[in-house]
Figure 1 (cartoon, rainbow, N blue to C red):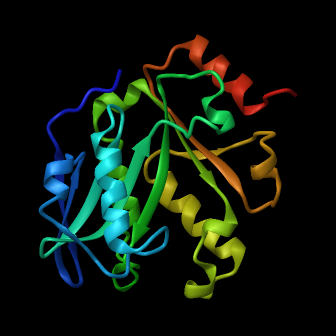
Figure 2: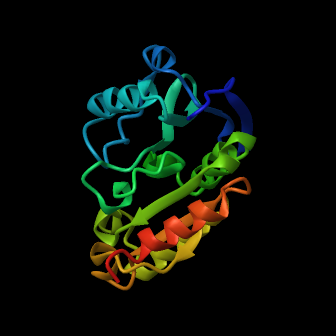
Length: 207
């Protein structure tokens, strides 16, 4: 179902100069780039670059990146939810997950995360999709930022809001495991009422 259009690009003028935001990027373009050594939240940078290539090669996979001097300094990923997760229960082709977002530490504070998400949903084709992001406090680099759980949650929520994602209730046990956890959702304009109702059922599975 996913339709890969020509990449969108936008320049962000920041205090350290111009940064290129672009995507969705194909695997072959990622082959020509290097990852900033501070992009290690999920796995070492080289291995994370390999993971991005694998996602970019998926039919529904989309990778948006922030580039500074031909170095990837940030990225956001979109793909179908993991088959073992509850969000794949109904195998909804038009349900896609904002799976990961990461900005190199020295580039934080430039609002690049918000700008990447904003760019990624500016493609009109994204209006066909329900986008979710599952936010778990144990995935946040709270120790490195020295922020409280609640301050970090505010930052994450504001960043997701830039792309039109907002908190929605759910009975998912992992989300309910801590009050700072949340399910963020954006429902595209072209999503049918039937699929909206199916997604509501998914949010409150077995209730």
